[in-house]
Image (tube, rainbow, N blue to C red; front, side, top):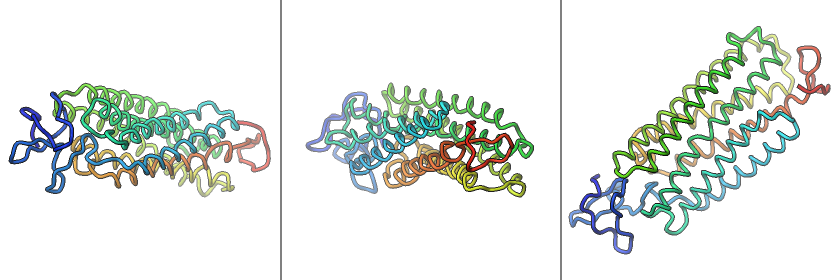
Length: 314
């Protein structure tokens, strides 16, 4: 990898590398400049390291749009305004996948400012929006403890949720700063610095989710022998734990992806991204829909036990 200094030509038929192009290039023996080298051969891709799949972009854009609509309907039915966090996360996924779809179009992954903007919309949006799914998980745990009893909790879940939401808010600010740095990067070194800032925000997210999941699992294990496990309770707790694990898997992947910057070896492969990020977030939204209080907590009796039939709203 070299800088773009002195690059005056590119792949025949492709665009000339513009002055100040901030991403890595490969200079062959003749002095011609290319985006970078992949497996010993010259590739002409700019920001992703591959041409994003149009079919995958359409498929995931459709899935996230449908799941966001499902959560919006469930929120209206349950009348729990705070669950809008899942809808916000879904809208963020839609925005990110719109950017990726535009990148998959002809000349959508060239060296232009437009292509860089679509790339950053994709990267920053898809990095931030799982934080909102985490916030939904925090709120669901409060409902679980309210239903099963707080005497089994080592820490007040509401206090834990507040602490983790503050930490997640910091993570969002860090990632937003990383996106801003990436947008203004005029050298590859600055772009890599932006990637490290984004990575720091993702690591904060991941740490919060690991702590939360450990607390949730500890609480459930302590409550398992003294709880009557109705099907609604099983859906609520099972969906919550599944969504939490999926967010952790996604966070671990994104941390590994960005550890070497925007164009590390893992970041230059699309299948791992589709499997460990996109698919995990689709399943996460599905798990949160299954655990949604509109389904699992439609009513609360005057006694601590959850009844499947009574209908006094929480």
